[in-house]
Image (tube, rainbow, N blue to C red; front, side, top):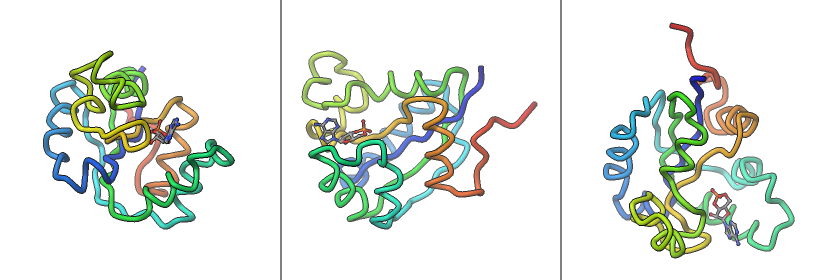
Length: 146
Ligand code: CMP
């Protein structure tokens, strides 16, 4: 099934000029970039985006970091895009990723267990919700029929 998913290039990668290298890996893997834009999250928007992590010890630091500087947000489309993008992104912890999946984006461009270069939606429901949080009505969560 053709799916859409959210990819965010987080401050540790976007602020250090890794956007073009990351996009190259994304297009080489056969994703269509339906939409891409520099985005500045408000604190409230970051809290909404990460609401499933509310209450966790890293929540405040995460939402402050993600709303502290601009990021680059994309909607990616491909057959099985949600799992495919998480696979290309790699394990959550960039340090561990360098052992487990050294060619993954988090291994190559991330920093550690919290600053890990990119985000990917974890399910179809999350993808739909996250597209709305980031892009509102500008982008449909569903692929255009051919
Ligand atoms: P991601 O999986 O995209 O979404 C949740 C984010 O929280 C995660 O990436 C990290 O950026 C961040 N984070 C910070 N600390 C942790 C932690 N201990 N476990 C998981 N995620 C963390």
